Picture 1 (cartoon, rainbow, N blue to C red):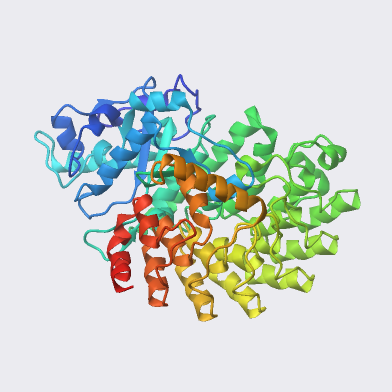
Picture 2 (picture 1 turned 90 degrees about the vertical axis):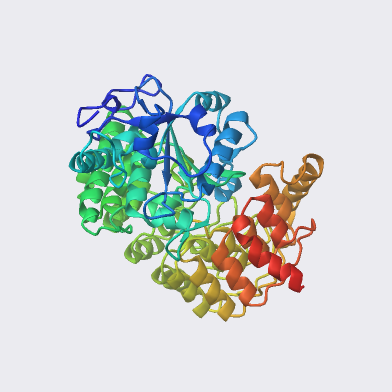
Length: 586
């Protein structure tokens, strides 16, 4: 292998992607069928090579890239528990017993991603990339290879990771919540998402020039879901955590290459909506200063043949949204002067994380635009209380205290639960926003224990349900508790979601709770669930411990499942000891 150009520089026959990252070390992979037969502590690159279990990847192979966080300093999985979970999950994905489901927000808006039967068959005959398997490890000596050569090969392989990602037909994030074996830290999806190198892998996947760039997150052996677009759009590589600080600039440069290549590819091949979307987001994604345009320069930059096309195009990314995502209030004013509508509902951008029926003002808060842009939109008579089909307003998606202040000055509704989902702005902020935004809503006297309708969540339920990937969740939950949020509040669904939950309960009664898909278990569990039950359902140790410290009781939901039952059903066994203590005490 050495530093020869590897086969991942050639286009795959399956998806014909255009590769932009340089591959400097041959890509070694393990057959899925061999991996499924392994046991215990995983063998490293050199050990697998000695046993004849490594293969050099070629484009005809179906490649599964596994991204993960190490649980030890010298071995990613010293006890072999994470590898056991991966084997169980892979077997479930192959035989169809494990369903990959959209995130909750995607389900609300009707997105329907799924893993095809063809993909499952390909997986069975596929090959795995994992850094421990595929990259030489310098602390493991190899006969006939000097330590210096090992270091060189390892560095070349690490530099080739973006190219390895581009070669993958499937991208898995292995992120169950587990304790690091040497450090007193919890490793889970949130910690994975915080790491700069993991963000690079994620960006290289999502920005790859291929038809399918889906990302699947494995939370446990029985729970897999497609990534929520919000998770990567608000987490840049440069702002990630790096063990070696000098890596930050070099890794960020690889992110720039991925973004620029994506934009060029979309410009040449379309679709035009995606091209304009990424072009407008380029400064935000890369940390560059936004450009000031004349109207003519703006139209040319975003490939509008005329002003009329920018105003009337059936494309989801019309002139208004291009100006909005680019953060250009002056262009937005010019477009409105020529007839643009700043309250026209969004359509056609579901795959990019912006759902049909969102108002432009909600898009502005969701994308964390500068307060100056929000002020301009309100001056241009954007409807401050426009709701999506789900009942969500711009205030629900506020990302900063300045957003909250400006919207409240414009008389945004702070208290009403928007139907059919039934969440208030504080509940939504507890799900998605940062600590400062939640604090601003609490300072404005938003009800911390609102009436429950629709989905029936309280703000504390929301903080628990969306804790994965949100490092602010524990602090938000503590702030809510300090403001007397009811730690034992029971969810009360209504309307459409009451029937969804009843159907899910009927299905679990017929098939068995543990045998049903994760989202079916979620909806079946929703009526009567407490914040502690929600934390147990998603497997969050920090929030489980916090709620118990604040007097949470092990109250069952309407189906009769206590927090321990919910944790066990989703195989979050790391919570077993603390929940068993509560059960015995009660």
